[in-house]
Length: 385
Image 1 (cartoon, rainbow, N blue to C red):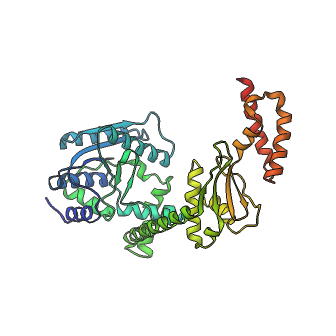
Image 2: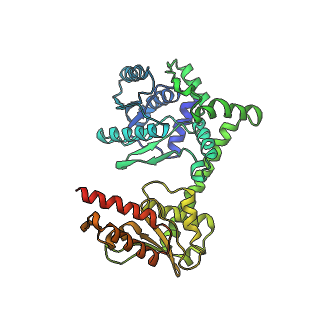
Image 3: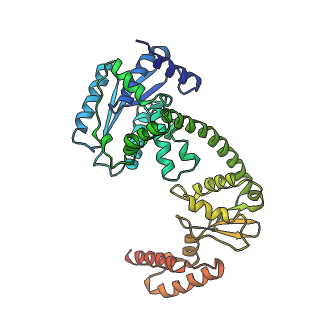
């Protein structure tokens, strides 16, 4: 049976160029209404597109019925004659974020091992609205508020695609009812200790009743508008970063990672300055930089000569040298300067003196104590070896 929802998703896939003909697509299926709706629609569109479909399910071991849930999805795949892949967590995952990261690692690994080109998820406009509200409450910028995107690259040239982002949860529920699809009810979706569930069950209904019945679709539309603006700003910030950034030609054992031309950055609007700085910090930090990290470096664009930041995570410090902001490897600088690998704990007092003098002379900072503690731990490990 061909429905208006089939036509809408078919049109979305074509107009947004989300998928191509004859691709191998791995559908993430939880057993809930959104993923069941997605699976049925993809199966019904398959003859028009020539896709090869597979189903993947992740058992987080959060619930007592998680094994039965996995078995249900496996039987569904068997009934539909679609290959099925299951991954079970070795132990229950501690948080939603950890579970999400693990899921996408699993999806990517299974897709790569079995030559699937895209992973398809059932995220809807409702998910988009909830994510926007969740990130707004957490204080996210436009990147967080754009929420879920239509597609994004994962590892190994595999794409994550979300073809239902214009479909609401009420629509997927009605679709499952019309097609008599048996929904597996996830009890964790009712647990109000999770912020997303409180947004879903309390905040959104309140906003719909008291402010705007169409708040769900309006928030999803806002996320869509922000996505286009973020894409433009990121491109402009990347151009600014390339103009301002100068890789050093110093030897490999040098301590300056790169230099930023302050005059170039000063000419740009603050929004682009922040985005360019964030792109730079992403190169030197293992975790995503937060607002405080970005603002510390932005402040140096107009700061007096010899101004500097506290160390960033990963042991990098930023120092103003005339028209340049120089990012330096401070921890490695100290270790190399005093040749820590050749010492033993008996040399610690001498090492402390060298570090203090070096830091005070070159960086004029008050972080000596923390660095000395790091050095002491390093020396003790060397002694144990």
